[in-house]
Length: 290
Image (cartoon, rainbow, N blue to C red; front, side):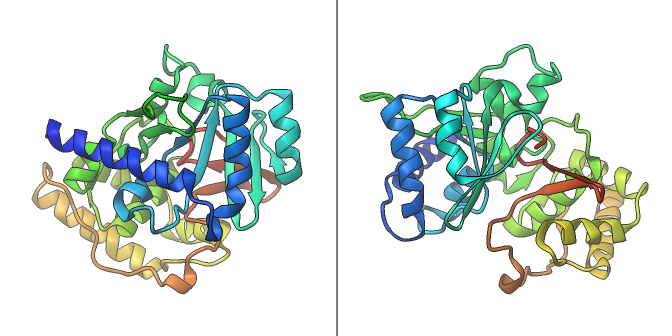
């Protein structure tokens, strides 16, 4: 598997280069921020979902989940981003809108798992350890230093791609309901299997909630439900049956396609409003609560 991982790593490095260098079409509005990071020499890494989409779908398809992590949020960077600011997160990050692109940008030290001291290290190389799913556990340097190869750090990401199976990477998360939804929708979106440990996690937590809550959670994300309660019920029933018959084997969700017309324009983002009275938004794919 080592050679295959090296090949995927090399492919991802090329895909990120093409994505960052693109100056046409829908990506053109991102050029100013990429150029600014290059001009100022800021250390920034692309994180999670965007890299997943680039390695699976290639640079021809625009990533739906863009997160950027910087070494620190300098006053100069904050001033530059203020032009595009949608909201500030409670930990000092930015939710930014540039043309049709909505993404989060925050300082490395403000990553939730680091702030909660779940890991002794707090370097970019440690960042992939903080995601709930292994298929999110990868970071790539946005603008490498001149003459240097683009740095890529991962923690089970390439193995998940090769096996076409998603699993838990870092379980400690304050929003298990959101993690359940993330896992189910990621497995369906990618048509990947669900590893036994993750299957157990899903089944454990759905025993403690009504599936209507997951439908409601979709409405909070996308203003509509991509999958109804009947579909979710079929998924859970199937997972329970497969896990009972073969507890050590990955499980697969029954087929149920996402209608493209229902996909959110701004991207496949997992955000969660803690309650109707609280406007704080929490994203589980990027491990920093907004």
